[in-house]
Structures are given as structure tokens and as C-alpha cells.
Amino acid sequence: MMYYLPSKNLLGRGCINQLAGEIRDLGYKKALVVSDKVLTGNGIVEKVTGQLDQIMVDYVIYDEVKPNPTCEQVHKGVEILKGNGCDFILSIGGGSPQDCASGISILATNGGDIRQYEGVHKSQRPGFPTIAVNTTAGTSAELTINYVITDEDRGVKMVCVDKNSLAVLSVNDPELMVEKPAGLTAATGMDALTHAIETIVTPGATTVTDATALEAVKIIFDYLPSAVKDGTDIEAREQLSYACFLAGMAFSNAGLGFVHAMAHQLGGVYDLPHGVCNAMLLPVVEKENAKFAPKKFRLLAERLGFETEGRTDEECSAFVLDEIVLLAEEVGIPKSLKELGVANPDLELLAENALKDACAPGNPFMPTKEQTIKMFEEIL
Image (cartoon, rainbow, N blue to C red; front, top):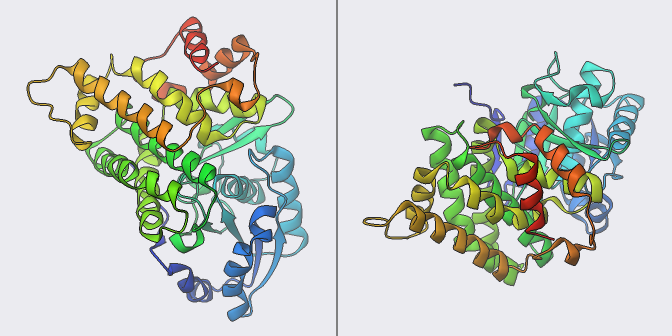
């Protein structure tokens, strides 16, 4: 198998302070800093760009990325990059800035329209050099070959899987994640849990990806409630950053499944938060997947401390599903689309688009349109 991962990754408390030296060694001179208004407003971007100031590396800030980044935002980023003579991208944030930066990277070297790169390995040339600084423990977008861009014209989240989008360096410093709001912490943590569980269940899983994903699952169950309860709990933040990294290593190389296929449509059509959609759909989809991958749910049950000897596959699966629901309740995940302001979703459209999603083939079984509608109905 081919295993993709950035060539260098900084992990742990205070690792952001190594960034200046790494950039100096790489010889870069000017960065396009890709982030969002929240992170420029709360001082996180300034903390990171302070590393550039130390070594007198110039930069221009593009902080107009919003949740569920769009084609327009990618294209604008490319214009700013080229117009300012930047020689590398420095992305700062969670999934949205990271995904936007990946799109900018691919488009800057391959040209065209970002819509051309929807699907698997569509680009011909390596992307523009990117250093990815992560600020949430959830998406793993800083280290994977996956990025998602919303086509605002079609109302579709385009899944782009591209080896050429890998960052040259990822940075996961839990000190940049301290005091994140409880809701964001919960959503990103459940996003990472979804990555890990879908990776374990997918037919594309391997011994290597199972090992990292199973450990990610255990860490998230152990530490997510603490991080949600106390945003300053640095130990919980650090452990979750490791879980995010482990889950990212796994799904970038094994693939995802139908939870993501469905969640992408809710984000694309109704602009809903990705992590929350994943969390709501996870037990719904995995209840069906358990019928097709019972051995994987036995592995999950064992890792979560369930005594599986003498137990049926159904008992092991039920334990895992109950634990997912309990964790989601504990960290305050909404239970219905109505709570998110979507009372009458277009289930036909959502189901049709989910079946076309690039993540769908990674599921243990391919649902019918009718089955997909029924699963959406469970979170109305």
C-alpha cells in the first residue's frame, strides 16, 4: 500500500516555537497566511506570525475564510498569493482554513478552476509549498490528502483527495487550542472520532490504520469530556491533539465512509457545521454498518473496555453504539436538524448527493436512496 503523511510534523506543547527555525531552514521568504477573522481577532494568528517576524520573513494575511470554504475563497486566495509574490502558504486554523489553503496550493501550481479537482488525485503537479498550523483537535486537515471545498453554485461540498495537496510541515501545538469554546471543542472532537471509527470500519482499513485509529478512539473517549468542561485543561488538549493526528494518519490512507458522505450534503446545502453533522449521523450510519463489519465493532468494543469474550457480535456493536450516543450527549451535541434551524430539509436532494459523494464508496455497504433518506430522517 501507499502511505501518505507530511514529511515533517511538529507535535506537543510549545512546538510552535520551533516553527521559525523550520521556515529558516526551508529558505522561504514570503508567506500567504490563510486563516479566518476569529483567529486574527483572538491573537492566534499574531502568535504564529510572530515566528515569521523573528526571522524577518515577510507575509500577507488572507483571513476571509469562513466555515465551509468556497470556490470563490480559493480563487481569491490564489490571486493574493500571486499578486504579492509569496513563495509559500502558511495556513492557521481548523479544517476550513486548512482546506482552503490546500485548494489554493493545488490551483497555484496546476491552474484552472478548483472545480476541476473534485475527486481522487486529479492534479498533475505538486501543490504550492504549504506549512499547516492546526488550532483545533478535529479535522486533521493539516496532515491529510483530503480537502473539501463548497461549490456555492451547486450547493455541493466537493471532496478532493489529492496526494499533491500534502503540506511540507504540519504543526499541532495544544497551547494554540486552549480556551476554544465548548461547542467547537465538542464538534471537532466528535469529527475526529468519526474519522477514526469510519476508518476502522471501511474495507480499505489495514493493520497500520486500525492501530492508529483504535488508539484515537480511546483517547477521545477518555479526554473529550474534560476538554469540553474545562477549556484550559492542557493535558486534555494535548491528548486530543494526538488523537486528531492519529485519526488523520488513518483516514488519509484508508478512507472514510457514508457518515461523511451524508454530512457533506448537510454542510453544502444548509451550511451546517461539519463536526456536528458527523456526530449526529455517526450512530445512525454505524448501526447499519455493524451488520456488515461485526469484527470491527468487536475490536472497538474491546478498545473501549468491554468484555467481549462470550459476547455476541450484536452485543459488542450495541455497546459501541450506546457509548457513541452517551459521549455525544455528554459533550452537548444537538440531537436533531431542527435544533440547527433546518426543519424541512430536501431529503431527496440530500440522499442523491450523498450517494455521489467521494467518501461513499469507502463504506462497508452502499445504501440505496431509500435507505439514505431513512437515515436522514432519524436526525430530523
